[in-house]
Image (cartoon, rainbow, N blue to C red; front, top):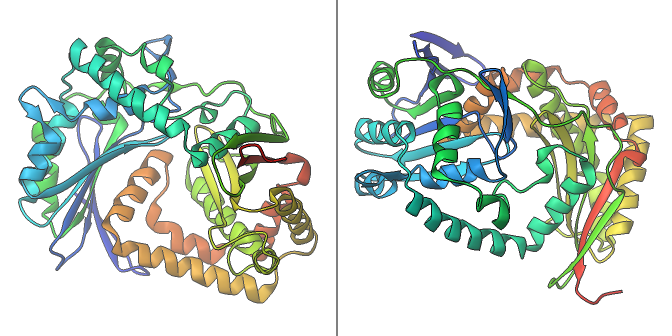
Amino acid sequence: MKSKSYDLIREQVFSEKLENGLTVFVVLKRGYNKSFAFFAADYGGADRRFKLGGQWLDTPMGVAHFLEHKMFDTKDGNALTNLSANGASPNAFTSSDITAYHFESTEKFEENLEILLSFVSIPYFTPDSVQKEQGIIGQEIKMTEDDPDYAVYYGLMKALFRSNPLRDSVAGTVESISRITADTLYHCHKVFYNPSNMVLVVAGDVDPEKTVAAARRILPKEPGELPRRDYGPAETSVPEALRTEHEMEVSIPIFLLGSKVSPVTDGRGYLEQELTGSLALDILAGHSSPLYLKLYREGLINSGFSAAYEAAAGAAYIMAGGESSDPDAVFEAFKTEAKRLADKGPDPALFDRLKKAMTGRHIRSLNSFDSICHNVARGYFRGYDAFDAPDILKTITPEDVTAFIRSLPAEQMTLSVVKPRGSV
């Protein structure tokens, strides 16, 4: 196995790429009682159209999420139950660009790892179980669609993007999941859950060699073909709509403003832009920023206001929002402050302080095994080393932040609002 040490953050990582294409990472944490395993596929809700064997294939919205739900079913029962009975705390999630299965345990780690690797790699679906799950997920979708946070987020996505699948719910719609069959799930499992398209990340005081041996013993022996993804026509910098609005049962309007950003699709630059964008948003609208303090004093926002940089499915964007009695006033103030910073650059003292704070957050996140494994897996899929973040942060300059903010002109921004039903 390869071993790499990171002196700045005092981490040691072992890795090995198996013959079947799977890469295994073990982040060694000596002296810890708990261990964490994270088995992930480079496959999310946005991966609906792909090319395999020279042929383009289309799948309904929601397949990746549906598959995640069904993967816990085994021929002999339910893997979730088996892991819990064996002392593990298991879970799974599907995002726009990744599906992951994970568990935490303080005992029987190797046994639980074998269960994890087995059920994720051996699908078991029946027409009856798929039909039953359609009803369960359909109810979840209906409940989610009644959630104001869901409505304001996907309102923003639809306002930003013309065709990118980020505009559509990861869970799909009741109609789209009705077209999912057992054959659909088996096919997508074969395409995306092949070892070449997956990664295993483990954190804890575990034996790296035994971890690799388990993966080599349990998983398929042959690599699979990596699918080519299609996220639709290239997006322009201009949003699809300048404003979107819904009425729902809320007591005060909630909002999200946003703007597309020119994406970096993979490699170290992907992480550099993410860190630069996140630092720029801390300076522009973070809780220590002049804009936040001004809006908070005026009663236009509360402590729930936040901002974030996101990238997935060949696209990147920023968003900021929360609750406000006057979302349009906040939107205008945000655009004005972005213009001011684009012209003058950030205050040097604020830049230095927030850069140090972000570095501290990254180092503290190394205490979270969940965060470590997720970040390593995401970095692997996007072609960068997640542990390089502190070193990259050291190189980010005020000019880098200013250039990022300049890429957010007012005409590229859009606003999504959910206001109280019946309000004027």
